[in-house]
Length: 278
Image (cartoon, rainbow, N blue to C red; front, side, top):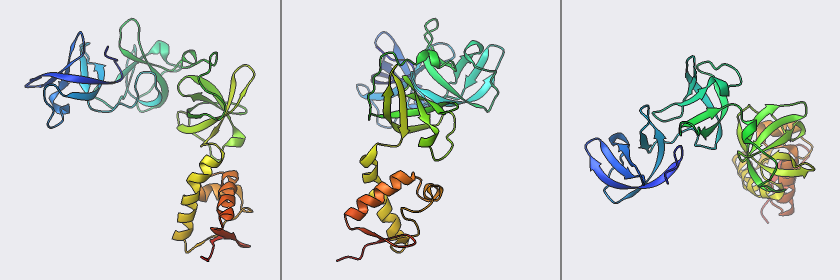
């Protein structure tokens, strides 16, 4: 069964002057000539994205869209009319969002956070800004300490509502952040706490020493590239640390502590330097 609005692996069944037809089960799906890779022949399998053209025909492309069905993403408004708006999809076709599914009227050039879904009436990929109805914390698919994909959704008094794995809602508190994120920004994070009522608190990055291991080599490389010395240590200002290293002071101190225990660095009054080889 072909999944419209998603990637599919399909077999080439015949070649024509204007492209190749792929086996879509009940339908033959055209892969236009401009997307046919060199060397592709009948009987080969190919990974393609499937969508409907303006006449309602299924079309295959090797272009990669901004988002697939089920994704929540920021998409740029291309055109508007009395019925809705068209969002740039990254392929030859735009995605339609009706006025009834917009939170406020759209204007060309804006970037808006939407979710893509299949409209049951038309069978076509459609966008909606009414994302809440597509999210639920009733049955969670995550647990504490899981690494997750986070999309910044809405700003609140205590932090930001975030969308977790395109399925659940959580909160990223202000004290977890060291810069102001943009609505629609996507980042990696982990489940910090699940509170009664399946309320989820998240943190950015990866948990604990998993992050430290990734940062250790980066810190050593930065020291090597700066003559073995950097004017930062565990007493440095958190904002200065974030500006220079792009990490929180807590993460910075954990990384320094791990390197110090391995006797790879030493602390000075004004910073950190590479340890002299024994």
